[in-house]
Length: 290
Image (cartoon, rainbow, N blue to C red; front, top):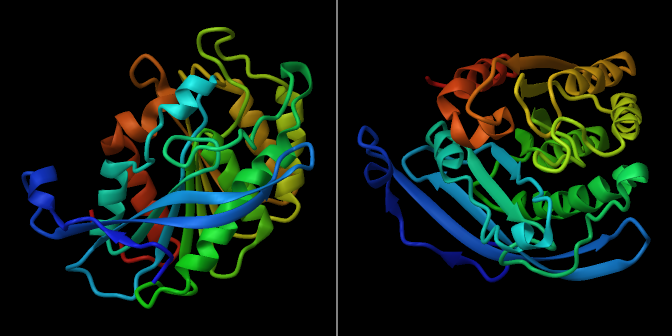
């Protein structure tokens, strides 16, 4: 089992959903990681990882590695607490997955330096910032694959916002056992209040995604909304097109407007994306029930 494992008491899923009866198990552990920030500084510290699984599904289980986003300010990053995505994690766990959610360096309970700071708005150093995030997931995946209840060759990568772009970065790294990846509202440099729909250095993001398309081999789903206040409706399509034209294997789904900011579709409107994700995963060979 991973280091410093702490088992949370099994939670009756009925306490979370009136119609479910299976038991959702939630675990936490601290994982020592080593990363390098965009300016070459090495940082070593533990991060908190939360794991979910349904103990009434048979193991070993395929892994879903789920990465969180990035608040626009230090206060927001500190306020993240412990990343969990409880509703989405429960949905995947009920369908037989082992779900792992890292709270990365510089966020919430993990704390530490902001190793994902990409610099000024006009000249963002996006690739090394996403690499700092992705390297933490690589180390986490290596730890998860030591578990007896984890399948070694059926990992799905998933992330939201900064975590979505981190997922594309991970896909381009072609980690052993990864068979699919899902990018929800992936990108960086957005600020819905200061400069809505106009993220920092969008052309650099386009170049980055094009470079990832040259090496990423696993099937991907990119999911965005028309009223994304961070990135708008047009830029994500341009990023996706650059990824595809460079050789990336992906499909694009842009949902109609949802709420005041469609950037939050993953957390606020799960009933909208769940059928789309279920269909995508079935086509990758997973037995997903509605």
